[in-house]
Image 1 (cartoon, rainbow, N blue to C red):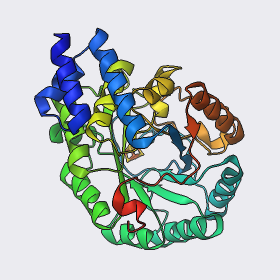
Image 2 (image 1 turned 90 degrees about the horizontal axis):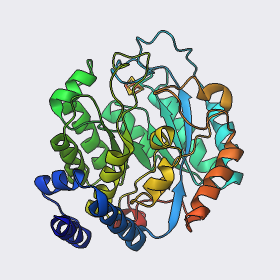
Image 3 (image 1 turned 45 degrees about the vertical axis):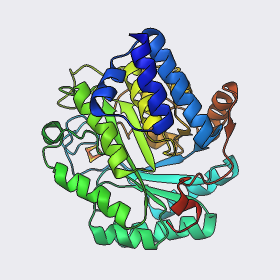
Image 4 (image 1 turned 120 degrees about the vertical axis):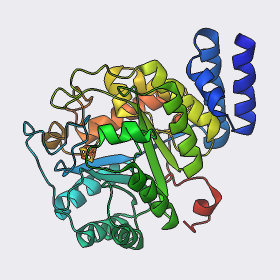
Amino acid sequence: MQKKYEGIIKQAAAEHKLERDEIITLLSCDGPALEFLFAAADQVRKTFMGDAVHLRGLIEFSSYCQRNCTYCGLRENNKTLSRYRLDAEEILTIARAAVPLGYKTVVLQSGEDSYYSAEMIAVITCRLKEELSLAVTLSLGERAKEDYRLWREAGADRYLLKHETSDAELYGALHPDMDWGNRKKSLYTLRELGYQVGSGCMVGLPGQTLTSLAADLLLFKELDVEMAGIGPFIPNPNTPLASAQRGTVELTLKMIAIARLLMPQTHLPATTALGSIDSKGRQKALVAGANVVMPNITPNKYRRLYEIYPNKICLDDNPAHCRNCIGGIISSLGRTVAESAGHSPKEQFTLGLG
Ligand code: SF4
């Protein structure tokens, strides 16, 4: 049995291809085969992405959302949450403070909040690029193609739009006011506009199967994403999924490791969600294929209000403390903090064409 797993893993590490059934087989492995999977993914990470870990400073700038995703604490119908919005000057002040801490990228993330016009986001993006020379990732959900285009023209380098699950039926159940086809179309639009595209999925959603998780990995591959965020589902008590089981650390790590075998040049974050259900979760991900960490640089007073899921780590830490803590984690693994902006190593982006 061990030999069967080893054969699939060795071939995937060499060719970066897996059939759906092979992925399902790997998602079921344990014991020595699982250790072999993690070691192979770590080796592929080292070969293609090196030992440097890229930091992305996360600014959660608005907790307002017009959607009602059944798993998310920011959903509009969650009236228990106090909401906040940051203006352009506050966002710039946070980013300015992140530069001396060594951040080269900021991620502007919010709920789907139409309070921010496309022009407002374009101006903020432009200022982050021109005044602070930061790489900019936007993560504001689904917007019109013209908005995406304007932001790209303003200098946004990357866009993160998680597909969450590629199972259209499950997607429909989790997102009562959204459409799976539109989600996928938006990801292709971002690709067409020349963004470095990030997607992501949750692991352990109620009703999710190994077949559906295999499809998530194959969708990342089909989209040829520059980043894939894979984190566990964590139920939020103020949502319809309050009593659902959360996803497991082990299955999430398997997904990350298989993603690394399939996509050697894709950035894979060790997610905060994984660190929130296991105090060593991010370290485990970093030795199973991950090469990115996204420390929160949002001021403390807002962090608790951006409660997608409960018991998030680092809620009481300030950005300087987070930076030290993450630096310590990275060096304890014999790795270094990257000094570059961490653009995709794919050729079209290293040549500066993307
Ligand atoms: S997952 Fe995103 S779009 Fe859905 S409710 Fe939460 S913040 Fe809004």
